[in-house]
Amino acid sequence: MRLLRGEIRKLARRPASYITLVILVGIIVLLYVAIGASYKMVGQTGQPDAAASQAAIAETLRFPQAWNALVGLVVGLGGLLGVAYGAAAAGGDWNWNMVKIAVARGESRSRYVLAKLGAVLILLIPGLVVAFVVGLLATILAATLAGIGVGGLTDSAGLGRLPSLFARGWWGMAEQAAIGFAIATLARSQLAGLAAGIALYFVEQIALLLLPDVIKYLPFSAVSSLLRESSSGGVSVGGNVAGRFSIDQPTALILVTAYLVIAALVSAVFVERAEITG
Image (tube, rainbow, N blue to C red):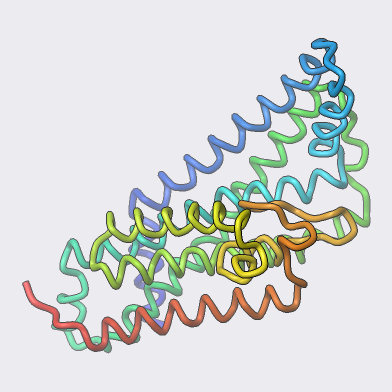
């Protein structure tokens, strides 16, 4: 616990913690404002599919369905940034010789790296809360711009799903951050971990269209299925979660947990056996 508390305090002061969050909420606000502003513009185009486009926008902004869209957006963007955050936390220690310093003062290598990963995952929680609150305000603003009522905001069924959606969203982001953390640890580089993690994310999404029956079991696609809400047709996070593009939620939970544990073990074993010089 001493190591974990120390790592939380250290990471909380790093610029990466704030920069990542500012980027996330900034993108969320811009996207929702653009969606709200486009609602009436789409209706004025006179195109044959204008009504369908407006219906899709309304589905995104009208509560209680809007909760699903909001969590999907926050976790989709936040997961990608979580990869970057995990890579920054792990790679920065190698760049600044913090691992060598920790070992020199007698810390267990594996305990040190797992404490740092634990701190990353814990700090995702306040970041997710802030992004969710800002996203909610942005959704209300966008709905107002579009002239869509927000009466369903207090719908008891929608509010009742929020704790489960939030918990699954955090667990999915935790898995993605752990993957970025592991890659940066193996590469001993913040930049390499960041580039490789983001490349893996986009390669998986592209491959999902070509080999959905295989790719849907991989880390980022499993997070999409974990967030799936059968009652509303699904939440898309980085890819299509409908039909053959998704797996059932219990299986997705098992896979996401397994990927997180594997990433943690890989990081711990590598640091335990690594030759630390410099």
